[in-house]
Amino acid sequence: MVLPLHVDSMLLKLPAEVVTRDQDIISSYLTDFRRQYVGATAALLRPRNTAEVQAIIRACAEHKIGVVPQGGNTSYCTAATPSADGQELLVSLERMNKVRELDPKNLSVTADAGVILSDLQQAADAAGLLLPLALGSQQSCRIGGNLSTNAGGINVIRYGMARDLVLGLEAVLPDGSLFRELNPLRKNNSGYDVKQLFIGAEGTLGIITSVSLKLVRKPRQTITAFLAVRDIASLVTILDAAQTQSGEAITSFEYISGTSLQLLLNADGRLRNPLEHESAHYVILEAATASPILNLEECISALLAELFESGLISDGTIAASELQRAVLWHLRENIPEAEIYHGGSVKHDIAVRTSRLAEFIESACQLVHSYRRGSILSVYGHVGDGNVHFNIVPPEGTDKAIFKRGVEEDISPEIYRLAFEMGGTFSAEYGIGRTKLNLLQRYGADGKIALMKRIKTAIDPHNLLNPGKVIP
Image (cartoon, rainbow, N blue to C red):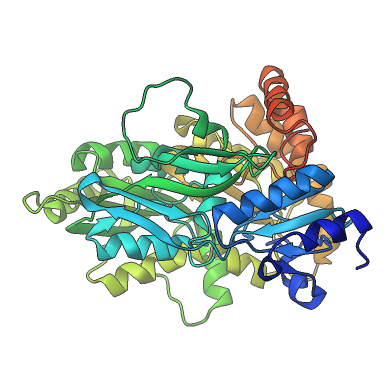
């Protein structure tokens, strides 16, 4: 790619080790995670520390060059992909991968934004602690990207979203100056909580370079159960009973439809249904406690006996080892790969209030079948926080591209409308990026969008940070 003279001269001012112009290397950074969009850029910039991020942003601000920050490139909404016109530079935080401090007595860890989530989990584990943020992509996503999208995951029910774990944050602003409030304090009531502006902003207000996070004590006991649920309408009742019986020890309560499980079993012949009989609805329930005194196993066994007796579940099994626990979680975490195996899916990241989740799923299923009979519905998600991944997979024998395009045109708008009418949202944990701008324009609160625009203009008046994302 031929560089404009002002871009070329700007790049020459940066450390040579930071700048990559080889398009063969750059190409692997330009396709979004779902392979729906391919961008272009004149150069890939890979800073090694916060000072180099500042130098890059100052140079880009001087020449009015747009910048797209990228962590692990796992965004489902093309938030980390530059535009196809090649007018933006790509900044990868992958080299900023140091754990700066782990304070066991403060239950906190401070790390660079480029640390891979699973590496940060392992660092906490080595100290006898737990980082509760857990995602299917944790082997490749990076903590800065997790914060910029306010990632959710399987433990939200107990520990909250990514923003709920943040104690301190460091970010480079659009003019190259530094916002730094990194001390891991649990109480700091000294004005606006400015750091929260950057969480969920997808790199449009600043580039997160470091973060301090809450840790929790590592569980001494973990119980994982896989249950067959008789009626989807009873999900909230089961969850309520589990939380009450366990004394709020439930960390995960994940719904899996029978269809989603069968897609996975068909895609990988080595896997088996852990229960003897098939069901239309399953739940993975996990409880954990750091207490060495409480008898969690006895508690969960009593819960399951109660659920069997009341007819809410028809079958169930409890993992007897860490290996069995891993097998159960594999069934939940690999459903997206099973959808890819069957031709991909049209994804809907919906959230409604927990009390209406079953109602939404049933209504949305009826809606899809009224439009396109034979559609394969892969439905799974986080019951405890009202987030369901409602995905539509092409049937065998159809032209997959044509089918998915038709679903996006005539069914997806109706699913989003249904969620909106039920007081829900079209984006529970994936964010906005580039692909959901039209949905934000249609279903976002007018006052909120107006305020977002004012904040963006105030902090980034020249629209240099991740232009074309989040803000309609």
